[in-house]
Image (cartoon, rainbow over the protein chains, first blue to last red):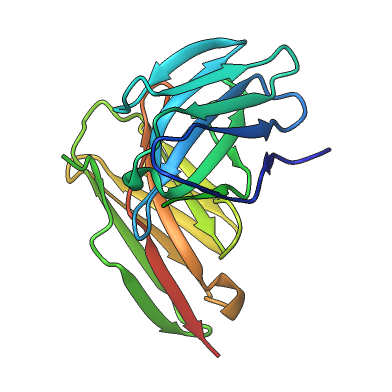
Length: 114
Length: 111
């Protein structure tokens, strides 16, 4: 059984650019959530996808968008990058119907915006 | 408006003693509470959870207590081991939806 993987591990971009982060869910999981974790803070919910449809969104602007594919892998796209977008981006997969929603996290992508 | 708060940024305990990590929440709609552990350069790892219909859940050395009237939960680790040193996040959810996380408590267990 493969765990959640994310790519790339680290990324450096400049303000105004666009970035795509990728995530492969744990085998058998149909739900993926994305979180942003700033330094010294807990993960902040960006959005969740269930069977390729957005299933909830946090307080993030529309320039944060996502996709989930038929194999349940996922992408997070951020347009018009700002300095404050520098953070660790975490992907988590789960089975939506599994009790209280324990999630399995990937190691994250560290994004630096200069 | 932080709905889940971990008021202690850090905690240091001696190996073999009890570690108690605390968490407060404000949203009475939360019906499931989770604890995650995070090591450097890794994603959070699920540790233990509790439903709002219970007040205690135990798994080996880890016990979570929930006091709904006080909107407070705690994680007890007994006995604490050096390998338990990590950042611990408290999280809460409604109907297995998005998880709202606290800012974490860094636990250091000294040998």
